[in-house]
Every structure is written in structure tokens, then in C-alpha cells.
Amino acid sequence: MLFSKLIYFSWKSTASVLPTLRGIRGFSRFATIHENNSNGSDSRISIGIVGTGAIGSYYGARLWERRDLYNVKFHMRSAENFDACQDHGLQVKSIHGDIFIPPSDLQAYRTTDEMGKVDWVVLALKSSALPCIPTLVKPLLRKKTRVLAIMNGLIDDDLVELLRTISLEENDVATKEKRDLPCAAVYGGMAFIGANRLRPGFVEHSDEGSLLGGIAAISKPEEDEEEELKALVELWKPTKVKFTEERLVIRGRWIKNCWNLPFNSVSCAMGGTLTIDKIVRDPSLRKLANDIMDETIAIANADLASRGVSSSMLLGDQLVRNTSCKAIRNESSIRKLFNLIPLLIHLLFGRKHKCGLSQTRWDRTKHQRC
Picture 1: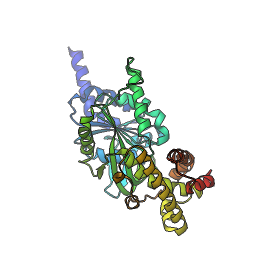
Picture 2 (picture 1 turned 30 degrees about the vertical axis):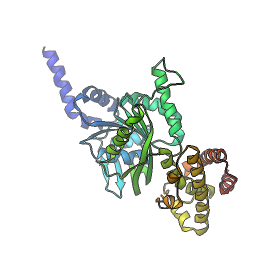
Picture 3 (picture 1 turned 135 degrees about the horizontal axis):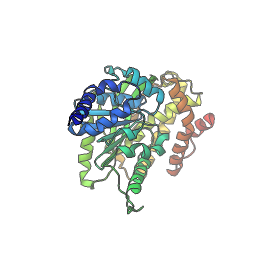
Picture 4 (picture 1 turned 45 degrees about the horizontal axis):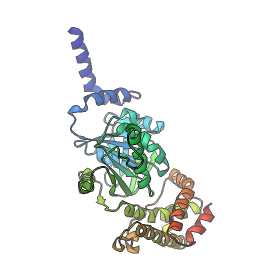
């Protein structure tokens, strides 16, 4: 009996100092085990941020601000970023108000296996990381989990199919003709934001920050689509993030691409040394970017029309040009774009030729870069 009481006292004492102990490097795994065995009394919505670069850090920190409602956990694959955050916390310098998550309050994990099941998964990864997503998210999912992908590119169809493979792994009777989602819903998110991780554990948010999002797929019958869209809207309502719902997620993807592709391709074609704000101020480069933007809008509308989207929902020139242009200030971001732009151009060319569009400025930009 005495021994049992000692064990109980030791466990309760650990619980009381757990936030402090979490700040000690190497303690996160033990902290995770304790939390996963004691979160039954936590009525907050649990959120797993997978990918804690600039985007994941910013939107994750905005959710963390409402820690009275949300229990936010951050997955950090980078050992350097993880160690910096464990030692000094996660800091976001923002035009909408700075955020600091001290080490004692930060739930940071090197692997998703440690995080436990969550109500929401927020994917903030590069498009090139798509093949890794099933492995990363599988430990986080249950049937009622919702997945939001704040990522660039036309990735939603591929993402949904990749997530369906998780169901195949867990359900031997599933067939290729009818594969269920392993979660309640999958959403696409488009971030209109200027943000960079300037160093491990430190993110600068310098422009905008709004989020556009919509449903990519749901596991429930079609009549429940409104309920799932409402859940996405309600997730961001208590935060400082300006969220707008988009009924056609592919349309939202194209709106974002109409800015990303023209300006990023021009920057990379010029050697990756020009930030977008410099392109805007240079008349000749701005004209080139505008020409490519016009062609991207044409490709977008051809693709949307091929999917049965009505003419009233196609992208207008004014709609796209009213979207804020985000400057890329971080050298590492430029370098990543420089490496990825041939892939982006290849994907866009495939879409362009599929829609029957002819050789254009895109081709000349491609040859200049490649």
C-alpha cells in the first residue's frame, strides 16, 4: 500500500512540473507518453502541425494563441529547429502582433509517432514532400480527424489518393474501386502571406496572412458537405487569421498559382537573385510577369472549364490582380524555388498542353531557366 502511494505521488508530482520539464532537451518523449495517458480530461480541440517552417509556425502559433480552446502540437523534423525551440521557444514577429511560445508551453516533437491522435492535422509542407505524407500523418489519424493542407500547387487530388492508401493498409477488404478516407475530411488551404523563417525558432511575418480554404474530399455522404465546411470556418474564427471559404478548392489553388508561378519563374529565370518586390518595380520584368500571369489565367480557366466549372466561376483578370503580391526575402526560399521551378513549369506545361493551349511566354521562360 505504501509503495502504491509513493508511485501515485511521484506520478502526480511529475504532472505538476511537466511543463517545466518539457523545456529540458530530450524530455519530450516522456512528456508525450504522460500527456497521451492523461489527456482524457482535456476538452480542448487537439491540433497537430506537420511541417514547422515559416507557414506552419505562423498558423500554428495563431492557433496556439487560443490555447484555452486548442491543444496545439508541433512536428519538427529539423533537429536544428527542434533544439532551438526546445532551448529558447518559438518566436513569431508579426505585423498582426508578435507571438512567443516559451519552451515550457511548447509541445514540440521530432516524430509524429510521439504526438498521439488529434482532431485536426494541419499540413504545412513543400509540395515535393507529398510522398511522405501517409507515413507522417498515419499516427495522428482517427476516423473523425480532419486534415487541412496549407500547401502550394495543384496537390489535392494526389493528396486524397495518397491518404486513401492508409485505408488500404488498415483494411484488407478494401478494393481499388472503393477506397475510404482514413479521416473525416480533407481540405485545401491557400496562404496569402509574406513570412520567412529567418533562423531556427524565429519566424518573421511581414505581409498579409489571410487564408483561403475549401473541401477537397469528405468521407461522409454528400449532404454533410456543409457541416464539414462549417467546421473549417469555425476552426479559424476564434483566431486572428482572416479566413475565407472557397467552394471550389481547385479554383482557390489556381488563384494562388496565378501569383506564385509568374513571379517565382521570372525570379528564377533571372538567376534567383530578384525578390518579387524588385520585379514589380522594374517595368520590363513586371510586363514579363504580367504576360505570364495572363497565360496562367488562360490555363487556369481552360482547366476549370474542363472540370465542368461554370463560366461565372472562372478567374477574371481583376480578381487575380487584386490579390496581394508577396515578396520573397529569404535567400534559402529563393534557392528552394530555384531548384523546384523546373518541376513547377513541367506540371504547368502538362496542364497547358492537355487544355490545348499553344507555345507562349512560358516556353521562353522555361528555356531561359532550364
